Length: 102
Image 1 (cartoon, helix red, strand yellow):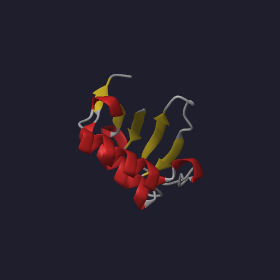
Image 2 (spheres, helix red, strand yellow; image 1 turned 60 degrees about the horizontal axis):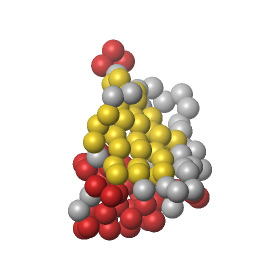
Image 3 (spheres, one colour; image 1 turned 90 degrees about the vertical axis):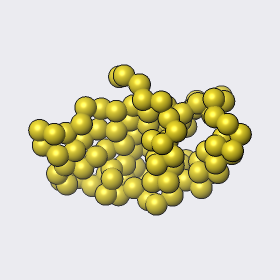
Image 4 (cartoon, helix red, strand yellow; image 1 turned 60 degrees about the vertical axis):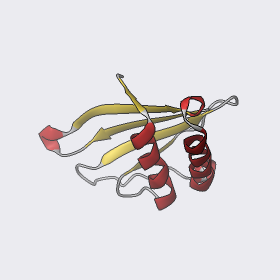
């Protein structure tokens, strides 16, 4: 299983270039792998509708996908509308994942 996160947006000329972070569950230690599984289950990603606040300037937008044997079903949201359970997963991915170049 792999979790992919892309982030883009921000404030005007200081807006971030897209950032991509990937976590491979197989590369984590057992405790972190268990935590990742718990956070994925808690986020209930397949049931989350897209959540983007239109017209809101300078927000960060996210695309999050959990990739497994059956493929992936990514969700999109922004930093204003992200539910708390999804934010926990995003924080974990940012903390433990490997940043990649687009």
